Image 1 (cartoon, one colour):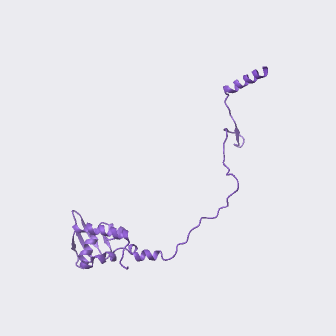
Image 2: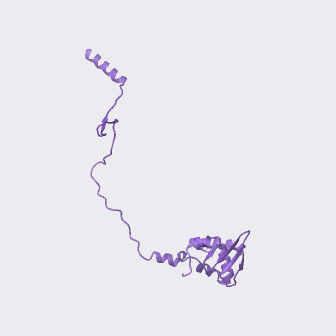
Image 3: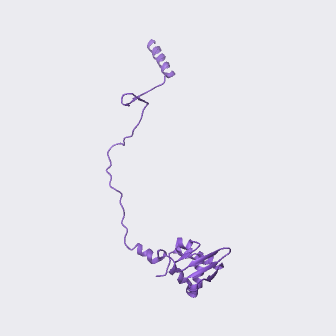
Length: 163
């Protein structure tokens, strides 16, 4: 269980391994740590000791990129699969994942709130707001336009009184 990676990291590593099949690698210094990887129009420098590549994908994700996979294959031969686990970040291993969740995680409850009785008050503005000059107090005044129905109602009331 010590060398198992998380499924998502394993999937990424598998894609990188397949992507590195068409690349050619050359050991620059002969020490087994620095490699030059040649691809179609692209040349990358891989340093396995520092876990870095000039394409910067290995530096960012911390899972060996296609260039680093070819360098690992050149360096480790038969133990190539185990090298992937050693050169990837500890965060992607199952042991580190399980270690993070060993302790129980307690629930976080919301703060207690006193609810007030009755209907919630809302500010409502009815009519036109007129600002007076004295201390800018607001006076609310209802404005209603004259309606022809009011005039008709008055005529009906007069006729009803006559009858």
